[in-house]
Image: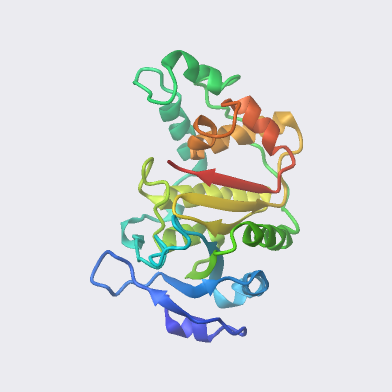
Length: 270
């Protein structure tokens, strides 16, 4: 991320600063962050300009939004040098491997008794569903992202604007060095690889990111319970806490029913 990229923008930015990563010698600045809450109108303009600027806009939330540190963004708790490349990972292989890890019944579980774990992921149990939904090229993804950005800013009034030099929203997570899912895997590039696939298949867009949360708009969500169940399996593999610690019922089927036709997907890692 360089000041020259910022200078190339055709829109005026509010007061802000480059953020230096905590790691290394202080010469890695993966992120520009606004000093005050973001305007959704500006965010939308920056999204439209991304193809020319190469800067992906994010609405950034924090663990304590009112705190001066605004962690992890203003505090520089970002670790881009630890990450691999999203291109180095196959999303299907990642999801299948994660599914296998999270459906194991030979380990102690502080959230669920072993006898209950397979019921959570019924009807698949420990078997990864190999049939993956695929969509034709999705239209209106950026327009849906702008709609969701407005909803998000209404609900998170302290969210700030971030800019990251990245080819797409999925890659911005890795380029920024965000490590929200670190309790499960500390290489964010793996999660970016999966989100890349969702961008292509469902018209997903990375709109907002928090300390350990991720918020996507979705232009082409599953429209039937059958399709939503396959997507729910991907979500469980990607972020098991969505189901293990989500709203009742704590089952894949219950989660699938909630995401039918939903134009936003939210993830939280404990």
